[in-house]
Length: 389
Image (cartoon, rainbow, N blue to C red; front, side, top):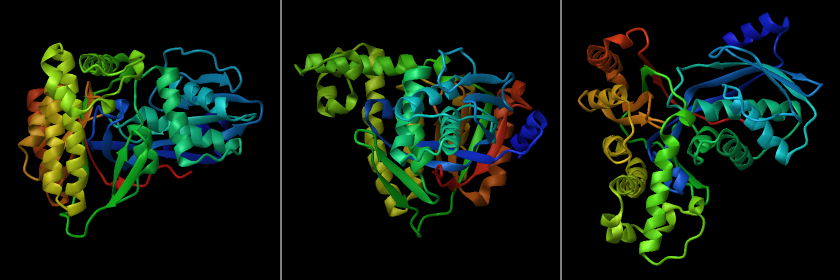
């Protein structure tokens, strides 16, 4: 791997270990986890690798093949955010240090195997880094501890209003199983791919646009949903406390139906997405259980449509990719991957038609956005196991 070669170039010796975290996709369940919804998802066989060695002096020194400049800090003197790519790693150090005593740092080189944007590379790099940092400090985390610490780093240090969708998919998933997760209590089921299901693979269509969740409208959309929920609680005479403690999961769909016309239009649309997505997830899990990938795919397309019109996300490039996917034979279903403000789209496809799908989508997309030639890319993936602790 290139990260191993770069490590040797920098340090003149081989890395001691390689830490890996997969990327994830969420065909149904987007924009739901932060308000304790349900999700379905997979880890995929592409992700983040980190080549590393321990540093006994407690210093952490990290480089990335995707970003310039080396970042450095001490495990006991992390400091605040600097606004660069390494904030996610500083946050991981900060979150782990709150729970465990550490004395050993590390030097490492990070490599991502797909373009950045929409596959939760931020969660994947945190998880891969945490795994390496735990290894050199002889710390053994449970799967739930790893999820919680990675979540703490991204939400409370970096400042992105995420839920636990990304971390859970990248830790709990197993190859050829659909992860069905309830974010209200972290209970989950791994639903095996039935023998009667049509064959499928996972296609990633990268738009050519990279993005950062912290710099997008992601946080604002979450606040708009929460504002709608807070107002619904008041309209219904429910007890409510702090704004940030309001969750759609605590307000029944019937209350939304009763009072939705009293909400400002943006808040109503955000709530409409959350409540309908909750139903799509439940229906999708049952479709997967039956082996009905056509129905699961249809629900994923509907999830994408709701993200455009109710959640109001999607750069023009992504919206065009979504439209092309809907009209392409052999694609069961798909949507934006990630927050949907730039990045990529994912789809569940018939592997026997993969070559034709790749050619048709590229031709139509580059006809619409010729400036993306050389930036747009297609990647064929499979489901995979989550992080190995």
